[in-house]
Length: 471
Image (cartoon, rainbow, N blue to C red):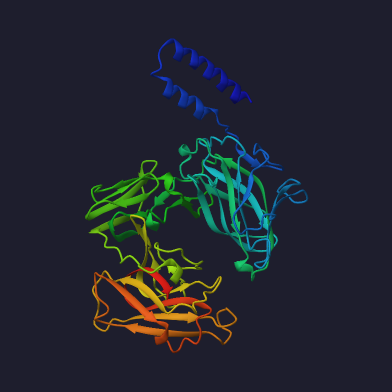
């Protein structure tokens, strides 16, 4: 309360000066007073919650909403702690535990601190997927997260370094966590957290930030394509001599484009290609250059796939902006260990494009629910191969039906593969493919269609659009 009283008196005095002199200084004085007014409280939970208000726990979608509670029988040098009950993977209330703790009211000024710290233990040795702060379900502007944290059955201290405390003038996202049972054979467990607070340790070396995970990456784009700076991390030397990698949100860094006539980059790390040519995107944090870069090679105006002409009533769409798509599990089922295909999808002036790089094969699955296409006569897709086509290059399109049980396996799955070669396959042009179901004798049924698989890549690039069944 002392700080708030002083701030109130300061604002009253400043208001008098503003009225006496002129309005030209009002913005600077007002901003300074507002920034100083937010609480600098460090503690979040020490036997009980500190300054969090009454409505501060917000579970993630799909998580078990009752996973968190206060345990008055366990604590680090105390009698209370936060308890987190990670559910079994098949728990009907939620398959994992995860949420944010957000200040109910004005945020906090955390510029005095260099780390979020807490003590933690678990009912058995486990790995917690994510622990961090800065997520508020609004902008999520200054998130910082550590991942795959190994936890034992005795209390141990966790330190999450703050990448740049000078930015945390009004932070509401005090803590976030996500924990599943993937490492415990899908069985649940419990972990406890106590003495959760921000600290000024003074023993954490300045972090080395990186973009693109510290690599120098190149990307081919078109005018109007938006892409993002990714792989933003910072590595800190911890008091115990180990290195701690912290995943950061983009707003911690400042970005620069070496050639804004080719591509611009905003404060959120979003890159917009505006003209043909090459530019290099780099970044700094608190004035220190980050490692890694992203080279944008803009090849000019993008040629869109032909606009579909079928009526929506005669279409079951898997991927197209021209139609309403059915629910799709994924557009790139990464099937280890043989698949190399990576998704680098992009949008050009509102047109979404599937972009498969290092393409050898990829699976698109839509099994929840499966698709009944018995009234349809064809499958359609448009593909584009931007690079040269090697002699003998093939593209195989497989359509898979999961059978009467509607599930993968079970002995009733059927599929048919159709192979395309030159002259159908051409470079630098959209290739429209239409395959009648009547030409798929190995597909015993199409009442439970669930997958479309593309095969035959040679590690190059393949764009895809307008994937649908039609009559």
